[in-house]
Image (cartoon, rainbow, N blue to C red):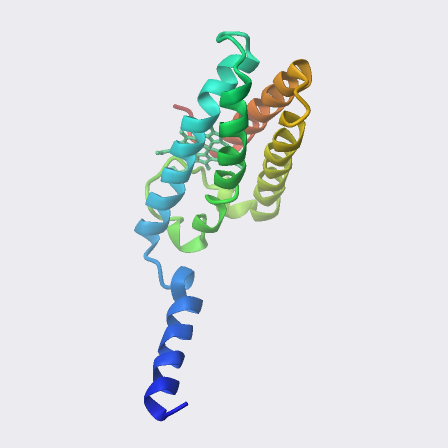
Length: 149
Ligand code: HEC
């Protein structure tokens, strides 16, 4: 590599490693809220099916369960300590109870992953039960960590 190529490579690796660390707190808040909003979008119809308020549609579950599972991994790196002073729906416990909040994230991600695997079984009752388990995971976390709406 010549000097220019080495310099370019160095700049690129700095840019890559700094992608998260450098993001502005306001941007992180916007992104984590966007991920939550999209979770709602893809979970919403499945939730209605789980609660028996909408006819069960296996095709929608097959499409939405993996989307939700991917989205379920996205919000958490946006709850950094430097976002604490921005007025959002996140309660102070998010920042003071970091280990407990992480447990709630992990439990939730385990539930969405489980839905993906159960959805392949075609067992409607088991799938609906898992959707209800996810719903409890959303509201359980919101109860402790999100301002009442
Ligand atoms: C581990 C905790 C946790 C879990 C699990 C969780 N949320 Fe949230 N959610 C939060 C917090 C904290 C906020 C407030 C974030 C903020 O305002 O920056 C939030 C905010 C939201 C918002 C508002 C976003 C906005 O634009 O202000 C929606 C919608 C939402 N969650 C939907 C969901 C759905 C649907 C699920 C389950 C499929 C879910 N959440 C699971 C913690 C969680």
